Length: 159
Image (cartoon, rainbow, N blue to C red):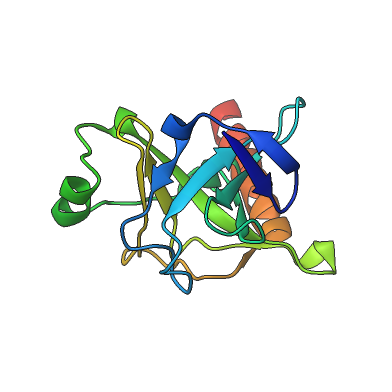
């Protein structure tokens, strides 16, 4: 099926790739069907979560573990049941990326990740209660933090 997208124009998608968000995404509860798009032949940490109902609605996502290897999301039993999660292998975790005009201020939302169970084509935005996560972690700061942690680990291993 053809789908008009915000960032990629018309793309051809398989209707079975549609991911249902029964409760929508915070602030966009009326939009429940989305597809994950790569958008590029080049490897990229970013993905696009495109609404099927509204071509102008799309979210940039990324794998949070790239910049925050210690990120923890403990999914409660209710959410696991709702998303039909049988094991950790069933899910992918993404965070929403906000790209302002000043790209140096790009941020990620670690407080409310997007959980996708591709096996059953379901998704949800999940609020993380554990940790000191907020809705705005500046990407540049997180990259620096990860570099510092890796340097400390490298120095500890060398001793």
